[in-house]
Image (cartoon, rainbow, N blue to C red; front, side, top):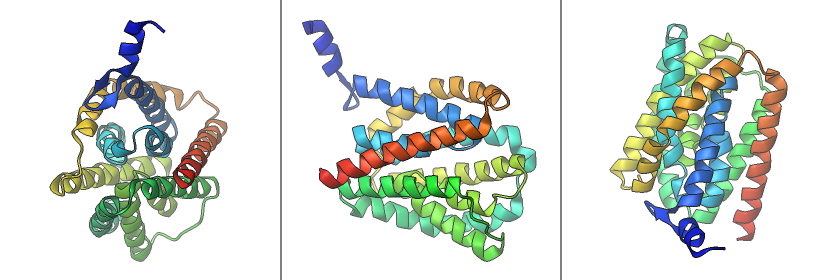
Length: 254
């Protein structure tokens, strides 16, 4: 290896190796594409893979990126928001968010990795085997609370809300969940900033990755009607599960 190449590979920006930034950028690009295509992917795919390389970026980087990604979906589906769901679930996210922030500050690094891996595996299982849950005020409040805790702690907060909306029209699901995720992600980021747990590296990288989101979202929206949706979805979930297993083993073995 030439000295110049060695220096390039060893270079860092905001405390993160440049080669790691490039790999995470690829993960963000693919995750955003998948999310624009099937409605999930950025958190499920990104959380375990990023935690393997730079655990200090989880969950804050993904929460910051969730805001523009979900906003883009909301702009398209804004006329299909179910305000009743939002009215019950969003207030319940507040205490869930506070619990999630506490978990991040209280749990040691390796156990946070375990938490990320387990939550991703649970989310994959729920996505593959949809559980039928009646949409009542109680279930919406419960889903909002759990989504707030899981979304804030490990950036995987979609499945609880997706379950209670599983049998609603797709555009209504996308519009409602996008509004919930935009508001919830902003809420989580603000609380992390308040307690001093919002790394400068997460902010800088989120800004740097914005052009990747601008590329991935229109491509994913275009591919939405052209890919074999269910086969593609299951392949993505399999990849998420594999990455979660690798993270779980690494976190437990050390």
